[in-house]
Image 1: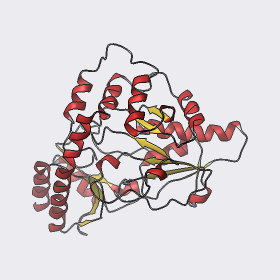
Image 2: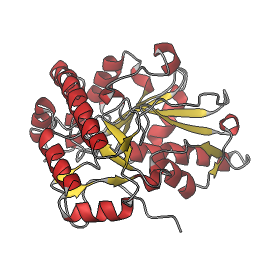
Image 3: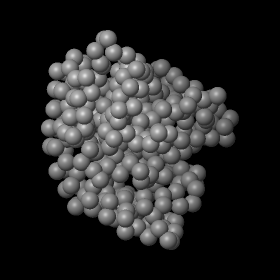
Image 4: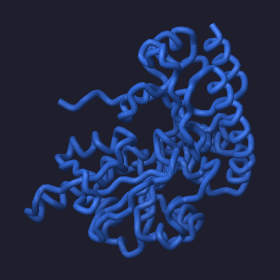
Length: 329
């Protein structure tokens, strides 16, 4: 039986008053995107071909519309492309397909691989499916390994690329044309409750786009998701996002200083989140349980193979003040 998936944010007890477990933009929700979602026509189906949305996204990224794949969420695409790799192996009677996943990574990569029977390998050069994320989760750092096989399907999870606060991407514009780029703008827009995403296929992979679209259910993105993705391509939304980045940088510096002043160790990060280790006398399990009961939620990084660490999203000063009070007492 597969292990239960672990996520941050709301749980069976509801939302925490101060949620450091989420990587969503702390300045959100983005006003123009939120208005678009609120104005979405929920009484009718969206266009099942998504013609206008596909074109808007393709134009936004300056690529051919034939390279666009819409997804119900980033997680939905993770499972769909994993199933495609597994299905290809079964229909062609080839060997069992393999997957390479960073040591510290989003759990759905491994969960999907397990569900579809892909063998997880440690040598990236032997993998049929390669996962990358930059800035990475949970560390928010550069992706370290790019020496994959030319025959591999490589997916770069760009969930946090719009929320990059420092550093430079490992791949330049030309390098991006050889990998799948997976975008889920709801984090950057502070609208994680809206589930919608899209992927840009590598140049020359248009036939795979057709096959992946055939594996999707009808209306894979609902009206609210369409509204959010369409708003993502608008200059008003991008201007708002650009204005939030300096604010997030300031809040991040303040949050790291606060933690270090109370004896925490903080890992470097290029994103709007980072990993931190509490003082030795405090166990992460006890800390997360105790603080959650007082309205502060942290993300135990043990599920990312970082036992003894927590991942903290950068939050607003009010939340940081609550964090300071809890650390002081």
